[in-house]
Image 1 (cartoon, rainbow, N blue to C red):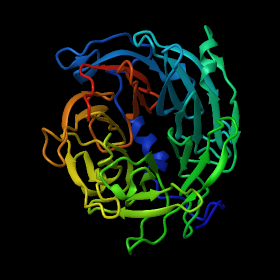
Image 2 (cartoon, helix red, strand yellow; image 1 turned 90 degrees about the vertical axis):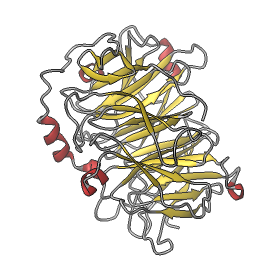
Image 3 (cartoon, rainbow, N blue to C red; image 1 turned 135 degrees about the vertical axis):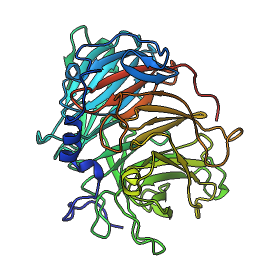
Image 4 (tube, rainbow, N blue to C red; image 1 turned 120 degrees about the vertical axis):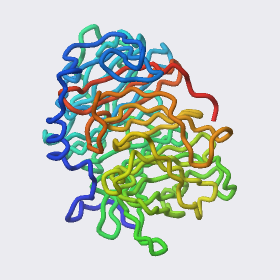
Length: 435
């Protein structure tokens, strides 16, 4: 196993690195009919529209334009619920900062403050934030940005004027990273797409960080992927979800298992012993173009994931994949669900029996995943909110991601382009059931 190392010659084949193509397309969007230069108040979803936005079973509570958040472009989003006050905060990434927005009253969001980026001030789209306890952990693809740690309890005393925050701690065992995932049960952060954790000349394996003391992060090891049963899977993990596994495969129950979206396969790791992690299996599929991101169902039986280039590469509609992970050693080929839209699917998260997907130009899509009523591999769309009206194409524009607050059911959605970008605060009409 190769530990920390310099980035090899040649970057990952990440489609999200196509800045000129993405921005050139977004510049052609005809936004005159729906551009909202000012904050937008509540708009119920009636007769298929919420103000200027097509919708079904999702109300618009409010909209915060990107310039108010201080960024040139938007990217990822996450949330935190204060365990003492119950207040809810959205954390939206921009090209140069992280914005903290109090959305406790979803119709009256309040920008509390921003945390500027670290590192060389390149124009870079990508930033990602996850939470462990009362701390946010933030990465960016900006060179020398490393990891920022922010104590979220500081938001309680912020205001009324938005503050410019500083980080409470930093970690510099990597220079840049594409994404971060956290297993709150083990207080472990998994940094992916970094310039470290190299295997077979390819960077970007799982960079594991012990965050049990949040303001003193410690390197915990690398988990990498080499040649595996002749499949030649990629070591670069674009995204990952790590859990204490409680699924059907009795052999692995109670162990810490990671499900990586590794560009051409889903890679399943056992990282229980961080000094000696191993890859249990990898699963490819016929339409693999760029395995992007996924989410486990609550029973740990299925891993739902998306491919960010199959719509373009295969000429197909938006497609989601349902992988049965009942047998971690040998998962079968995934089942496919084809949407009615043409957009590229981006980030998705399972909550109970619902899947909340951010599908670029098709906006937020809420899908039912109820194994008691649906066929194998089937998903059923129950609601949507379209952030780019009149545009449904397989291009990198529109919405990036979403976060659902568990207590209120409020859903916050981030969008990318400067012309139409910002933070949407939404209210689905129905809430996830158990599943």
